[in-house]
Length: 168
Image (cartoon, rainbow, N blue to C red):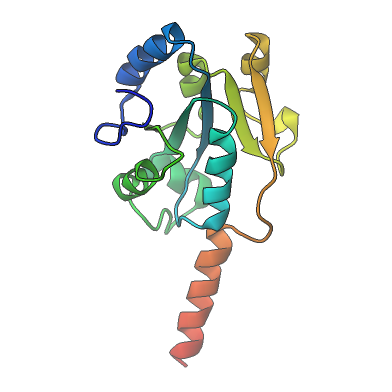
């Protein structure tokens, strides 16, 4: 698996670890971000593009259906983990997608050992899971500006209220 390869860029953690070693030997800068990415929207695209600009290889940690449900509540995710992974993997900035089943990507971050950890600017540094690890091994944590008022939760609410109004 090489950065930019599309056919096999949804990868389990053991394969990602092997790829990480190869990227390290090649001197490539690995960037990591994560999320549920339930209903993909423009804010997600902006985040991913900004994250990719921070290095050579962008790895996206994707919450599994189970962890997304525990985080977001019943009825979520709207899209299955396989569909969300396929959509993310097809996006130009994304080099790899790796599913994780925990509530946070801490184990994934610890194992991947990224050079850069990217989250939205709405998070303060102390709230970013894994930030202390990444800075501890000499990496960077970057908070990027998010497009205001874009969120999957808000989009789902808007769709639901539109359907309710139409059914009255």
